[in-house]
Image 1 (tube, rainbow, N blue to C red):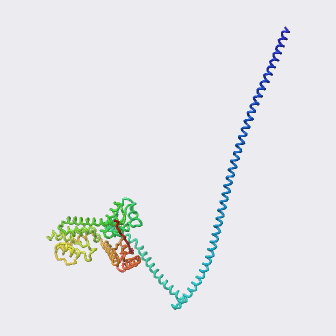
Image 2 (cartoon, one colour; image 1 turned 90 degrees about the vertical axis):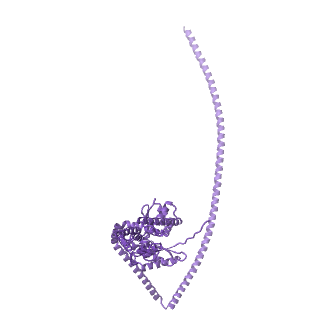
Length: 511
């Protein structure tokens, strides 16, 4: 058994040894294979590294060349910039040298002129001294005597100016002292005659928009100035919202202005030429309205057979007032009163009411014809075919001729009843209108005056002159002369502004 075990052990040892030997041999072969593979990979890596090294060297050379080129380009640009700056500095230096030379030259010229001026001053002083000596010799006055005379004259003028200023201050003080009294009186008049004042002196025109005020005024005021000159009506543009006020003592002119302004606002075209056209058309329309009013009143008074010119003159009384009373309504009232009284006493009703209706017809033209309105009316009625009885009653209603008939006395009575009833008349308006008419008469009495309008309730008179007769310098003298004549011939409260308007128009037609 032992031997078997020994052989088995030996076999095992031999097998192990053979296995070990075989493993060692295999290991050596593996190591050699690995070594060969590693060497091959090392060679590949070495070759690849060499190739990359060459590429990197090439890239580095290219980059170095590019950087060198860029550096050289920047250096060239820097050198060129420096060269340009050097050239610019050189040009500036040359320009500066020229300017310095010019300044030095001008300085020498200034010094030369200063020396000349100094010589001229010396010569002027010498001539002034010589002149003073010569003046003293001629006037036989010394410088001190002449100074005293001049100072005395200045003192006199100053004293006159001071006196005038003192008088103005006194007047202003007096006006301020009466302010409360005027306010009380004005409030009383407003309460008693507010409707009459609004109807007689001013008219209000409502505007669709506030912006129309600027169009009414026009560029540099040319529209409002043309409107006021053509119509003779003063336009008051104030802070009243969407409204302007027309002010004029002549109701016909004011009505023409009111209607014309309404048409201009509706049409939208507002300029001086259009204003003149519309005003002319409106005047014709107002004439038509007055004719219609004359026919209406004649129909209401039942007076037939009146001449068309009498109808027209009767209609003009619609815009005429007497002591604040509407003359057309007053005439109709007188006709009705005279007819009733004639019927009661058995007088001629036709003569009485016709004469009463026409008794103030002269007031329609009393601005144009001189004389009492009763005499003017009687002459008009005579020329337009009225009977002698009617003419006599018209002419006698203010005792300009002695009344001879019952109808004449009836016209006088009807006139007195209509005018004397409470609230019918106010004397202040008639005096006010007469004062404005007197202002216009004084202004138009000077040669070269074309038209004159009293505006601003008589506080201003606007005088339009013939431009070919009155020049700008003569306008100043004319304003002073008109003011002096107003001071001498009229009585008025406060002060009156005299405005001279000289306008030249050049008109041509494109054909």
